[in-house]
Image (cartoon, one colour):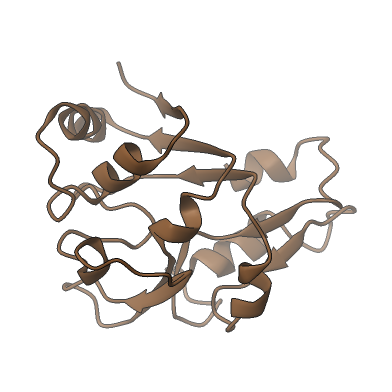
Length: 171
């Protein structure tokens, strides 16, 4: 996605990008979403770079004053989106947080994620689903009884007041 955007003719000067989540690692680490974004979308060869708000910095004052026009999200094999994982405490507790730190049980580093509270303010949401297994999972999430502690993406689907576009690479 980033490489495709980078090679496009789109003028990004009036755009602002925010990752929905990032691993709180140095940008040179291969697992850093921000490092990947900076390398492939905001590289030094690009003429009209977009604005970028880093989740690694405490940008609460900036986030309070913006509303996303477009959120492009994915889904993991555990039905998480952003870094909102099954059994996330903020799926059970009402919060006004715009972002928070979290940790996947199997990882040794923290992540910072935008909250559903922030993502639900988006004008448009697109969910990108890649692979047969994830296509089957998103269909299960849509058709199963509401249980966001098990299927976090259900919370987003149920509480977003507009249509969500879902694009899959497998049918």
